[in-house]
Amino acid sequence: MEDNYLTMDLLRFTTAGSVDDGKSTLIGRLLYDSKSIFEDQMEAIEKASKQKGEENVNLALLTDGLRAEREQGITIDVAYRYFATPKRKFIIADTPGHIEYTRNMVTGASTANLAIILVDARNGIVEQTRRHSFIASLLGIDHIVYCVNKMDLVNYSQQTFSSIKEELKTFSSKLRTKDISFIPISALKGDNVVNRGKNMEWYEGSTLLHTLENIHIASDRNLIDCRFPVQYVIRPQNDKFHDYRGYAGRIEGGVFKKGDQVMVLPSGFSSKIKSIDTFNGEIEEAYSPMSVALTLEDDIDISRGDMIVRKNNSPSPEQNIDVMLCWLSTTPLQPGGKYAIKHTSKDARCMIKNILYKVDINTLHRIEEDKKIEANDIARVSLRITQPLFIDSYSSNKATGSIIIIDEATNNTVGAGMII
Image (tube, rainbow, N blue to C red; front, side, top):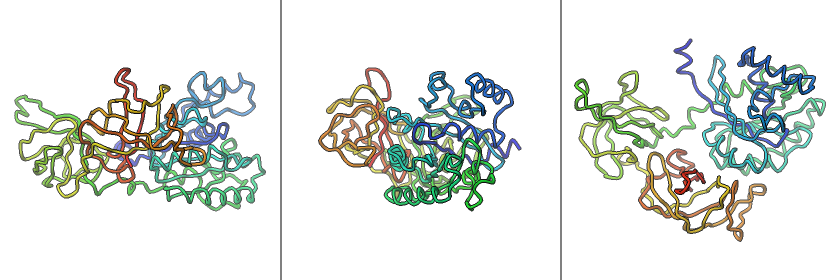
């Protein structure tokens, strides 16, 4: 079983929705009904629910871990939860619903394969639904599942679900995300989360867990464009590995095979892959997102921040880039300001050349006259970088198409950008 567990497919998903839509309850229900929590955890939340005078067990307490979250009954920070079923391993990022935590949602959703967006059956599409859908689409999440929650409060009405589904279909047709599904659920009672329940026999689709276990994510990765940013040069220099020189890092795109002809950027020198080494020994081929060490047949000067690619398929070296930037800091973005920038394993410095427009996250309209970028704002910005970065567009490769901006005075990450 353990060997099988290590090789099992991993799905990362994020939950989003308006305040009180039941995100934390839904995750609690997923963990509880799939038997992924321990008895002592269950006893602790039963006790906490009783102390608060609640008649049912409050499953939201499983994820709302901060004291302030429990006291206010809201999610503030991103809570990560891990669970597994016999089919797949999961990492859940439970993100906040409030507008002032947009940056937390961006952080939680940035590595997700799938987004679950909750819609309250009583309210239908609200501002937050649009905002979270837009952010999921902007972050290149390939699958969105709209869960119409609290069906128990509208008497499990098929008509209510159908009209919300039609409205969501019309709205989501404007998004980049193409794989979209709709499930009527009651997180509180458990209908259609892990088990079907008797209350919505008119619904013939999958339960949420069945969807999560079976959704196809292998083809979401870019297996065409070979990208290997070098993180570390391994030189043991001991008797056993006297001449060993390996380049360690994570493959961020494509498939690398032993004997492949490769090119090193920025030098442009080419060589062949001599071996692909892992902790468990040598392998014949490796692909995204594996972490490996490559050795080359020729002795080329390679250091951290360089990138190993295919000769006829390399990213473009750019010093001027446009990004969709989510601003994370409480200190506003300084037009003309200088910041440190990090792209894959490469560090450089940059200047904010121009703020083109700010996005109204609720209507998706461009605001060109307001150039003040504060925490939680998303804007299109032009950057000038001190040295060329080897970039792809974010839509073709998330790893080589994203950057983070760092305030050099405080060393805080102040912005996360997607290269257009």
